[in-house]
Image (tube, rainbow, N blue to C red):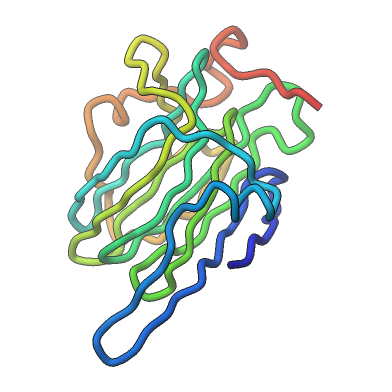
Length: 186
């Protein structure tokens, strides 16, 4: 297993060891000891699975207070996964990182607390799974606009995405009160 830094400090690409043969493959998706040895020492309390169709865009979601770090991966299909630094005072505030996650490339992304997260489905369907460092808290959940021009995410979609009502009504980063945004801790 290898962990790789991205352009956003704390957002990590995880390359798991995959052992395959003509029958299929095996990979270890989480091992707290192995991840801690590689510098990712976190406790996960909740696992989630999302099934979506092509063109679905989920996000950009965050919770504050009660932020969630997430270890995300795709079990079936392909998505474009995005993390946005929304920590007030961060040197990378408003910057984003995106990458393709798929059943073929086996990549995982660790999105730390203090980042908004989202993905869009590029394949016919996608089975997306993620581990969270804190429990889902509907009273502290928030959404950031996927098409915020000040952030400038380049989503690889043809046409308009399929959004939930919550994501359709999401706010631009400049319109989210400072009291709702997490604070950068150096």
